[in-house]
Length: 146
Image 1 (cartoon, rainbow, N blue to C red):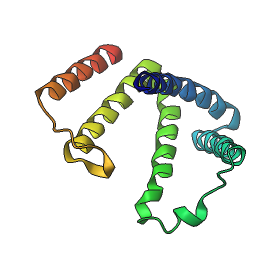
Image 2 (image 1 turned 120 degrees about the horizontal axis):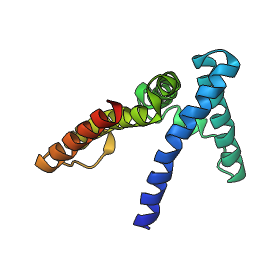
Image 3 (image 1 turned 45 degrees about the horizontal axis):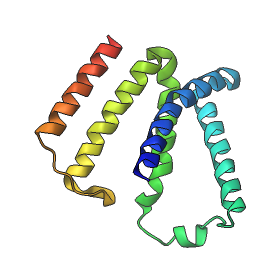
């Protein structure tokens, strides 16, 4: 089962530059980054709605609205920022640098969240191995970008 999760992570990561490239092409057709990001999210919303309907789960508005604080809804806004940023970045710095830099940001934020056990992540203290890994990634970003 663990290998299935690792494969899922690898495939999800591989889809990131594909999504950025597709959305960049879409931005050229719809004359803008924001319209392209909107269409991307609209299509994603429709696909997820179809999956919810097909699995009989329905849209859980009645459970989600009162379930927690306002910032529980921020994930969609963060996703919109990410998709929009990749549409801006991909044609300007290339897929390799875009992925390397966004990965570096993801790693830094992830290690912070892990170190403090925030947002329900398991507490994994920052240590020398993680520092070395982050340093190697930073070196990789530099080599890919420059």
